[in-house]
Amino acid sequence: MCKTIAEKIISKHSGKEVSAGETAITKIDFAFGQDGTSGLIIDTFNKIGAKRVSHPKNCALVIDHSAPSPIAAISQIHEKMRSFAKEQGISIYDIGCGVCHQVLPEGGHFGAGDLVIGADSHTCTYGALNLCACGMGSSDIACAFISGKTWFKVPESMKIILKGKLHQGVYAKDIILFIIKDLTAEGANYLSVEFSGETINHLSIDGRFTICNLSVEMGAKFGIMPFDGKTEKWLKGRVKKKLHPVLADKDAKYIDIREYDVSKLEPQIAKPHTVDNVSPISEVENIPIQEAFLGTCTNGRLEDLEIAGKILSGKKIHPEVKFIVAPASREVLLHALKKGIIEVFLRAGAVVVNPGCGPCVGTHQGIPTDGWNVISTANRNFKGRMGNPKANIYLASPATVAASAISGKITDPRRYLKS
Amino acid sequence: MIIKGKVKRIYKPDGSDNDINTDYIISGRYKFKIEDPKELGKHIFEDLNPNFVEKISPGDILVAGKNFGCGSSREQAPLAIKSAGIMAIIAQSFARIFYRNAFNLALPLIECETKNIQEDDFLEIDLEKGIVKNLTKRGNHLNKEIKIKPLPKMMLELLKTGGLVEYFKKYKGFNF
Image (cartoon, rainbow over all chains, first blue to last red; front, side, top):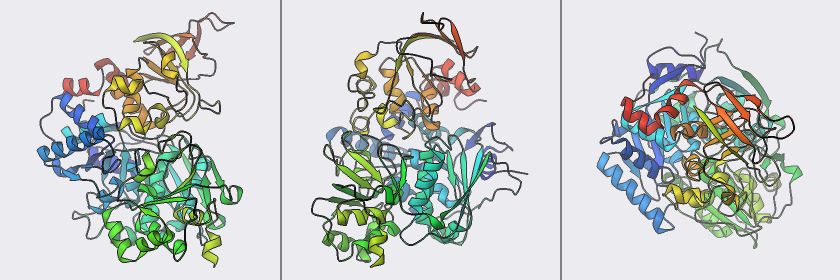
């Protein structure tokens, strides 16, 4: 036996036993594109001369990156996606539905044991549900639409064991930023990363999504969480088909095993302009900020909004700060409305925009001006990422972003949680 | 398969040539706006060096350090590089999604040591033999050979057929 989760899932989907290093053609359970990549998917589909998507129920297109459209050229791409989806009978999540990495799991399109590919690098997010998911380019997704299949080089695996309980004010985001600092931006390149350990039992599915989402920022192909009662509960009522939870064999081979004790961890910040340029908050506190952003496929979920809402409740954001909130999906927004969190944000002076990617990818809804420092819950702080190469982006947890929005400078959220 | 061309190196503002990400290759603000690959090609590396495109001549070879192409899954990144006239990229390592995307577009990526390759060096790459030869007369660099990491079979096949579109047309699916 001695198989990792990746080896098991790829073997099962290719109909033969394969191990790390081997190549396999696999069937896939789900494939999708978003509005930054679907134009090319459709062009490639047409160039190949394909007429029909082979398994329309296993495909979707999501309009989330620039939604609603800020310019005519993007409106054309959106309309091209709508026409293609209609013609092929595949699901389309139109403007306002939310970020692909929230609406697709919410939509119950896949569950434990599945193999999912998407034309978006953060597709690895879904590993939180105990499955293999990874991002690919538009051509690969077009071929998956046509054939229902793709090919894989079976990755080697790395195991990350998380021990200890997080202190108040420290979250899943802080754990994964710390790991990325330790492993670097290419430390898990081409690897399937299996997370395990007692800390995960205490993490919600939202927190697990955050960790798997950022796995690609250290180069990982997959980031996979174990299956437990929380996973089962989350998937129940969403996924109609039978679940196939996967455990690695006890003697599975790992090229590296790392252990992290999170009990002494303090909030972490990724400084400009790389995600592995991470410092504990004590080293960067008091840097002035002009924009704060809460949202994205990393940290725009209900738990993230709740944490930020708790800190902002009854408070006002700093007069010099522009604070933007983009809930990850309509479902998240509706829950947050019901719980009164959106009112907290609005009364604090935040701008709540529609569900979607918000200003993360730099096309609309809050492009910073020259020289601004932005504190954001997103996953990338590359120069120019938010649409202006003359701005600086700091990445942090929702709590740190909320605390910093109040004080107008990078602030340890524990200062607000104590009182 | 033999590729010959002049070297263009790319660096970040801090002087490092590692982790050149897809946002640097082609900014998100262009990939959403521009569907024409030729137009996209006019904006590569703009946030790192606004004049970079002016330095490129068709057939040039791009050279960088570790983890080239990390970041987003945008296929527009290798597409824009190819459309700008770059014939191949040499780096110490590549990020996973970018690697696959480039071969899908029949843009060869070569993994090898790059620290002795300089701007405007003239190189000859032999993909089958797995060797990069420096044809520049500079010190003892003339005809110096650098061994390259062998290309996976599927990637060679994609290069030979002209990319994934042509491959898929030829085989009507994946074939190995």
